[in-house]
Length: 406
Ligand code: SF4
Ligand code: SF4
Image 1: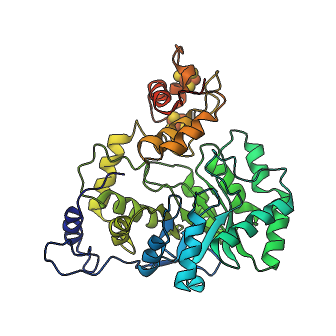
Image 2 (image 1 turned 60 degrees about the vertical axis):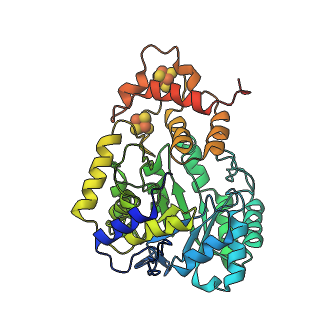
């Protein structure tokens, strides 16, 4: 993601009136200012955990030093996974250095240790109880800890087959392994997450109603997710916690004219303004991200924040594929998984995660090459947000197609 200069951010923060949310000295003779910190901790359902409202997504973590900085700034919830490269190893190193294991909450996933492989690292139905236990044991070694606070059944909705995904959510082998791990003191809580692209709301509702999950982590942002608020309300009513993710709605900055951090802070405040949301996870890649994001902690959504979000929504309304929407599911007779391709293109173009995007695209059975000769584009008629899907998929194919893949 592009970043403008630190000075722009400092000007924004001064304008925001947040007195102690300031950046470090910029080397121009100014004395160092107090760094922005976490200001609010949310009760996570009935878990008893109080998590930083803005929490650390470690999907692209490359050093233990960044974890230590985040802990120093008040972050106490760290979301990692075995398939996030060396993320667990770096967190383990930070935990060993800080001797502060009891002050933070670590969430990892029921998945195998391997480079990103388009969701294939997540344990599927057919895995044994022993295999579920083994991946957690393996995470504990890398994290240099005796226990995980949470293990997730992660990324539900990768497949268009609802029953298959529901089966993974409620896999008896997984539930039995979870009980065994809890009894052994190796995990404390079970959670479920989905960023779609298929059946997100339905799968999160199943998780909430099942009684097996302590909290959920759905995609949730200001770009109109009409059915997510119902899921959140039911979660709250049943004492199931909510951590939001994908709150930046694609994180497109191309045509934005705001200062650095202004859009992100507005988006965070919007998500956190919902009483059902106990906290959010955002990918942190640098100390600058902490400076840009943490001024939003504990702050209310203002009218000027809403204007920023409205401006973004107007710019990208017919460009942003809503994570988890899936309304075009089944509309393509050629079987093109529209939402997945548009998500991989988002990873490629907006997140700068080209490798993951291209590997994921290469694993698809049918890709955007099918769109070139498609005359009627029935998918576009199914999209309530009027996305020009055919041209977007053709462009995605040009970006994502590996030259050596047919
Ligand atoms: S443009 Fe045609 S081939 Fe491509 S996804 Fe839409 S309906 Fe399918
Ligand atoms: S292309 Fe349109 S209908 Fe399909 S998932 Fe995206 S927003 Fe929903």
